[in-house]
Structures are given as structure tokens and as C-alpha cells.
Length: 175
Length: 225
Image 1 (cartoon, each protein chain N blue to C red):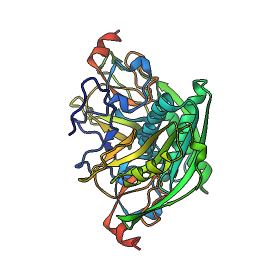
Image 2: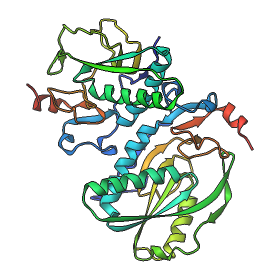
Image 3: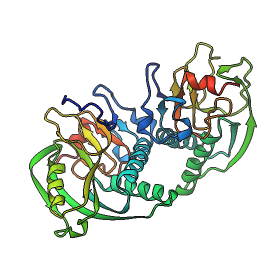
Image 4: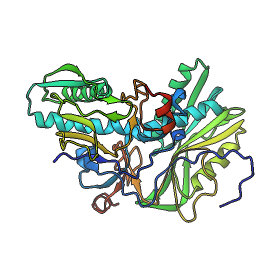
């Protein structure tokens, strides 16, 4: 069973003023739910677990664009660092696929997950298909999250922390 | 709670970590193998410390980051916080095209034995801090609990007639007879537990752990003096 960092349903997140957030998003966010530093630290550990489990076999990393690109980049960096610093190293090649399944904030029903068994965020939702990845960064409440390359209609990908989107912003950036 | 003046700008007091928060499971993070079993939980992961430092640096730069900033680092516990804070101040200053010279001086204090704060305070460091005269000074401390150290340092520094003295404390402990004065810049407000990591030690151990953690009973016994 994959271990994960659980973000509770009633977690309000941290005040925006405690972190550095791009000025153009200050009015659009309710709180910071996962700071960028915490994401990096968790990812560092995932990288270690993955390399350990791959047992020296060649890894093909498939990045699910666009939401996955930051996680993918950071995860690859950590795997590469491990490769450079230890006696054992694992060859790594990369590839990219693109998926679209969200319109505004509703997940449409057809999501195809091809390859890519590791995820940064797994949502606890009644609509879940029951699929559990092998490596999980965080388990999060069923709220709409943005930041760290996760978007709302293409906005917020340039935010480094994962935050809760305000209702006001959902209207503001609606398609 | 002291009354606050109406219209007074209340500075945010830092990221508050509640007393009943158990911390994160250590196994979700990377940590040095030699500390396995010695740590109860991770209170503040290294990455979150860095994010919070970025924010403090931004505020410091805006308020006192003009021309020259003298930084007084309280060793040994303060060394990582000071290093990362000054790096962030300098990096942000470079991107705003501001001309800022930072200079760091070091002072050493010894007041803990095992996990207890002792009465005597030894200040070891440069005798002559006259370079502080007429300048903005930032005292950088890793942890404030009774506030004794902070008070003693403020008194010491003021003797050299700086223009202004501010204090940056990464961690402020919530204790019953806590410090009446808070640092000007606070990273996190934490429960009254003995924490280690990010240069904070337990009898010199744990300085090489990059997350701030709560030590376990096993750890306390193992590294006892």
C-alpha cells in the first residue's frame, strides 16, 4: 500500500500573507494548502522510493501534460541527483502525453490514464474510479486546487504553491 | 492579551503551529539514515522553512534593506537560518535592482544543557561591534523561548548606537512565561516541545538534519550527556 501525506478535509490551509504569492493572484486565492517547499520535500522522498524499487531497470518517465509538468520536472531532478551521487544508477528516458478532462472545475467523465503510474495528488472523491497509483505524494480533499502547474482554464500554472481557489476567482476566470 | 491601539497595524505573527498538531510521519520524507528511531515526527519540513524564509526576506528587504544591512548571527543554532535568510535577501535584492550591502557578524551563546534552558548566558563574540554605529542591524536567532537571549543581545547591540535594530526569529515557542517581546520577523510559532534539526541541536546532535523535528524518547536517551 503506497504511503502518502494526508491533507484533511477540514484543513483550511495557511494564510496567503505567510507565503510569497504572485501579486496578480492575491485576490483570487483563499489559502495555501500545500507550500512549494513541502511538495519538493515529498517529491524528493518519492524519487528515492522509486529508484529503490526499480531495481536498476531502465525507467521511462511519462509526463502527463500540462498539469504534470512541474511535478515531472522536479521528480526527474531528484532522480537524476540520486543517480549522480550513488554507486548504483538507473538509466532514465522521458516522454510526454497530453490529456484534457476538465472544463471549468468539473471533471468530465472520460479520463484515460495511459501509463504514468505515479501521481503527486490523489483526490478523495466519491466519483473516484478506485484507481490508486503506486506512488502517492499527497491525498487531498475534494476541493478545487490550483498552482504548481495545476490550472483553472490555463490560469494559475505560474503559482508555485498549491492553493485553494476562491469562488470569486472561479467566476472571474470562467470560460 | 494586551489592548491594541485602534488603527495600529498588526503585524502577522508568523505561521502558527497548534499544540495538538502531531507533525508529519518521518517516513514520508528524506532524512539521514543514522537518525532512524531518534525522531518522533517532522514538525516543519525543510521546504516549508525555505518558503517562509523567502517571505521574511521580502519583508526585511522592504523595511530595512537600504544601503547597508548588518546581520548578527547567533551561533550555532542560527547558522542555517542566517545563511538561508541572507541568501534570500540578497537574491531578492538583485532582482529589484536595489543596491544593498550585507555584512554578517557572528556571536556565540551557550545556555542549554540537554533540553533545559539554564540560567547563565555566555556571550562569546566580537568585542568591538562599532561597525554597527549608524547602521540598520538585524539580529538573527533560530529560536526564541524565554526571550532572555534576545533581550541580552538587544541590550548589547544598542551599546554600539545602531540606527535601528530588528530581530528575526525562525521559531517562537509558546510557553507559559513566554517572552513579552516578540521578534520583529517571526517564521513559525510552535508548541512548547524540544525541537531539533535545521542546525538546532540536542547535545550537538541533529544539526545535520534538514527538517525541524520533535525528538523521540529513544533519541533523548541515546544522545544524553
